[in-house]
Structures are given as C-alpha cells and as structure tokens.
Length: 268
Length: 268
Image (cartoon, rainbow over all chains, first blue to last red; front, side):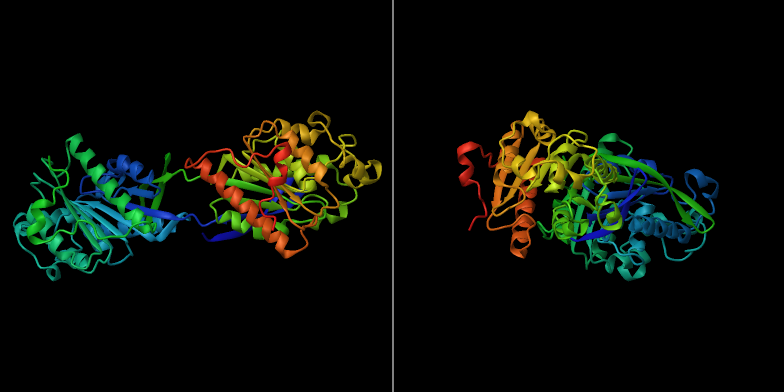
C-alpha cells in the first residue's frame, strides 16, 4: 500500500513540536447515482447507504429542472442535464478518498440514458442502467419535455435500433467496463425491446449482467421491487469490487441472444 | 460498515445542484511513535512508512529539547516531555480517518518509559516498548538531564522493582491492552533486569510479546539491528491488527518467569 508523509505542527504550551504524519493511500471506489426524469436524489439515499457500506463513496444529486430548480422543468435540455452529470462526476472524482480509476455510474430511465452518454466524456469502470430510456438524437438542445411531443418515443422504443444510430447506444458500444442492465417486467415506459437494444450495444463490455425484476413497473412503485433492485445492484457491485480488489476477476452472466430467457435472476 | 451523509453543492454554469455525499466510516488505527533521549522523529520514518502500509496512520514527532528546540535540552523535564506525548496523541486521535479506539503507542528508551506513563492519561490499545528506560519517581519536574547526576540510575536499573514503586511500572501494571517488549542483547544503558521489571509489571496485559534482538546495542547502531526491530514491530502490529479487524483474536507469546529463555524470536 502506498503511503505519504505530511509535516505538521503540534501545538504545546508556549510553542509547537515538529511532527510527521505518515498516511496510507486508502482510496476507495466512487459511485455516481443519476435519478430519472421527475425523480430526485433522495430516492437514491437508501441504495447509496447500502453501497457506501461496501466501502464506496456515493454521490446522489438533483438534476437541473428538479427539486430546487423545478421551475426549469419545462425548459431544461438533455445537454444541460448531461453537463449536470459531468459536474457531479468531477466533484466525486476529486474527493481525496476516491480512486478516480474506480468510478461507477448508476442511472435510471432518463438518468440511465444520460449516464451511458456520460461514459464517452468521463472514465467509468462500471455502469449500471435500470430501465434506461432512449431518445432520438435530434433536438439535443431543445427542452427535454418537448421531445415527448416532437418524437414518437413509444414507437421508437419498440424498434430494433443499431448502436451506431443512437448516441446512447453508440456510447454503450464503445464502453469497455462492466455493465449491469436491469429491466422491469411490466414497464410501460421503457419496453423490453429498448433493453434489448442496450444489451446488443454492449458488445465491448468486460462483462454484462442483465436482470429482470418480476412484476415491477417502470418507477418501482412497490417497496418489494425497490428492495429487489437494491439487492441486485449491491450484489453486482460487491462482485465487481471484489474483482477490482484483486481477489476474483471473471466474466459474469454474459447474456446474449437466445440465452436471455434464463437471465431473470430474481424471477420467482 | 457505518456510513454518513453530507449535503454538498455542485457548481454548474449559472448555479448549483444539490448533492448528497454518502461516505463509509473507514477509520483506521493510529500509531504514535516516541523517540528516545537524543533522538528525533526522523529515526522513525522508515518504520512509520512500513506501519502505514499496513493501513495505519502514524505520527512521529520531535520531543521538546530536541531538534528545533535543542536549546532546551538541559532544562526540559519529564513532565514537559509527557505533555508533548499527550499533545501529539491528541493530534493523532483527532485525525478524521483515525479510529480513536485503536491507537498504538510505540516508544524507545526514555520515550518508552514516558509512553508507558502516557497510557494512564490516554487510551491505548497497543503498547510497544523498545529498551524502555526507568527513572526514580522523585524529581518529576526537574530537568531530565539532572536525573543522571541526582539518581543512581545504573544501580536502579539493575534492581528488582515492584510495580507499585515506580510510576512507569505502575502504569504497565494497570495496562490492559496488548504489549510488545523488545530488549537489545548488549544494552549497556537499559539492562536485562529493567526489561524483567517491565515484563513482571504487565500482569493485566491482554497479551505480552517479549523479544530480544541478538547482538544489538541500546541505540541499534547497526542497520541489521534496526531492520530486525522494524520487522519485529511490523509483524507484531500486523498480528494485532488482524485481531482488531476481527479475523483472529488470541493471546500471543505470553512469556513469564522460566519461559523467558525461549522468548528470543529472532536470536540467530
């Protein structure tokens, strides 16, 4: 373990003593959590506390247009929200106890979509996307809300989309870290087909873990579904951290094409 | 692992985002190192770096009357030097990453003598004394240098002294943590008899590890002797930390009376 020295003064009555503090480099992974459209950072607190207990530093934050800046809900753009994520990432990566080579980005829905894109602008070792949404590339700087009237998102999300035809999928196609993809079985916002587009895009991933939460809706309204998601993410991250800490390192649950039916870890 | 939340602001263009940073309590042991009379903190740097690499924060410091305050060498008292140790201890224990319930004090010669006394005023879980000196209790506030003319220290250190007749031995008798005692085989300042007084005093210690460094002098002039001491201390501390971290917890090398001849771990 690397160590470093700091010279310090120790105050005593009438003066001070010269001291040297020798400290080990105990940097730990950082986990950035990006909420979905209409969500907030507090939704991630339970999850963040469980993840922090694994020995990580977690950062949750409110995207522009949410909570304190809700007044901007109708005008905020994808470009602005992506900039939010990068700003939060930089704050996390700069924490003195965070190892910037060990950052995970966790996102849900709209936050998952932007999290995928963020990996093209900041290094991420791990990427966990729950019910990641998809939007067409055009209109990047128009209000996000307006996309829902300008774009046929329902139809778009049911299509098979090649990775090079969408900015988020292209980001996934170039991502070389470990991936967790979580689908809600009864998701009427982000359908199974969208998840399959993501699965197909992660062709360079170091590992891919795809899971379905049974009977869950898009927003995980039921406590049981939220608990299942927390359990899924915590166990996946635990496995990833074990690997990163050098004890095990293996491909996990890579699921492709016809194997998908076996992928539901927590199906009852 | 306990975690805690901190609300932070994340600066973005034209404003900021509300964030919450969730951090695990990754507090680690602290090790305070007290040099002997005429020594300095730099003598402990090699050792401190090895100990820090075990995952501890180490503090070495110059006692009053040494280095920058060498002008006070002739006047400094035991009382002042004990106050130095307590001040340094408090700085170490207040480090945000130090677990104040896991502090080790390591001292040599005069520094070992004072380290033993310091355990009556500050909690220490581990105590490592190398060639700890002994002084008579009287004259506590007169210059330390003067003790060598006022007291027959050579004779005193050859005597068998009951723990209740000496402040440092009394401190050892009430110490309930784990102890490492290291003797130099050819020590013409602190003889074997003094070490035996310390061994006998540690009757409440949770464990006692007594070792002799073969052919070593009091000051460990030879590099080989210094290396042996570093190795001894690092291995002992490693075992102690393993226990503290909950993996093993056992009495180690408790040596009493007639077993002492077997105690020289690193005799050639």
